Image (cartoon, rainbow, N blue to C red; front, top):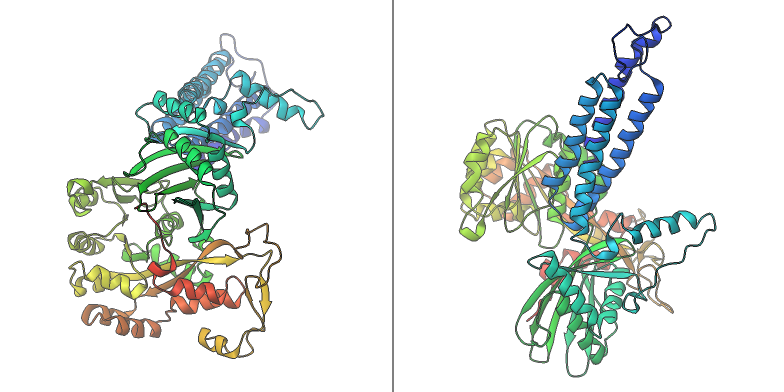
Length: 594
């Protein structure tokens, strides 16, 4: 949407420049011929400056409000396919019409209506579906705006009385997942009446501050243990008193539409909340255990949009090679990663790195496992719940003559074989599959039942990645590494003087990383570019070690070698690299209820 608005803005500026430029090269304006009305121009057919300024101001205001609508749609999970076209194309159509209407005071109201009516319709729609505290253009909203604007000037506006249930931490809860918005509001009202409502808000606030992706609560007779999933690793937290834990769980289940009295059967539900103006989606899963009950709370904030592969952690030289390959008219690129190591994000970023304006793109996705939308990428879906696979719809997809097709999940041989056939039709194909390394990704596709000769003949590159934690810049400490460690990492003697690690002796935990020693993650990539030598191995004897040997001759670096560069540069530690290089099942446990 942002690019679309910039395009229209640039187009408007060019249009007005072309229309207005000749007027300044002509003689002084003359009077308007009798009977000719004034439109956007003044006497003599030159543009009237004040009318031009009025048009530009309205356009810029529309840009600002439309950008807010787009962001608000994403935050509240509304249907962008309905509202984005309504607010964009109604105004653009009115703008073009206003420019050709010869009467200024007819075109101007038309333009204002085309801006205000769709915006008002969207505000009315969203205000009925969000928490009362999040509604806009209400009395409370205007009061907050006046208070914010007056604060820098020293003007104090008395705040509205705060409900005791909303006091304390800046967390505002909301119901989600009910049959209707009224049901969601009823769930919220029930949760607000529960004694543990504020304890639930404090639990969520603490998790957000620790950047937790999930919270795991284990209920026993002695108490409630708490763990946070931070940067892909479970971190033990402070235990929760059993009485407090029972109360907050009651509030949570009421908010999710579950039964607080049922502590044995599996239950799940959704909710939403805001913390310091950031929006989050939550999902609760609970299951009775032998010792009590286990509750998993998944938290999802606004996803970080990576604009380039460099931002993900890929080395610039490799990015340049991969980008050149992706711009070719045809080929087959295989993307892979273990579960939980960012494959979805990388698929999206790869699409963003490609030219989506000169070629048609189609993404084939499962209706039950949708991905983040990408601008100018059309989505075609199949339903795995009904026994369908990507192959079920590929014939119709290829009839649309797209330049690039990405299959988000390679699940059967028929899909891959159809993709291999289409490479010959000047099409770029991308496919994604779970694997621990690049060579294994190829073998996993072959194990679906695809003949090695078919896939190896058209394959262009294999990309595999794993996520690794970055050391906290506020508390990491340097140390002189033993020669044996440098040798194991493949770092020549004398190349680096010190390596870095989390602090070993801590008097007080770091306030930035909460004592974990790590903050944030990056990715380590291994990319196999297929040359003729490697292609010969892939099509004839696709064995793991033989693939590695042939790839090394083509310049391939393993995950260990790529990770060693991060260690040498002080980005991560030896211990973290060793953890990530272990089997992903060991590196990242993912507790589930029951």
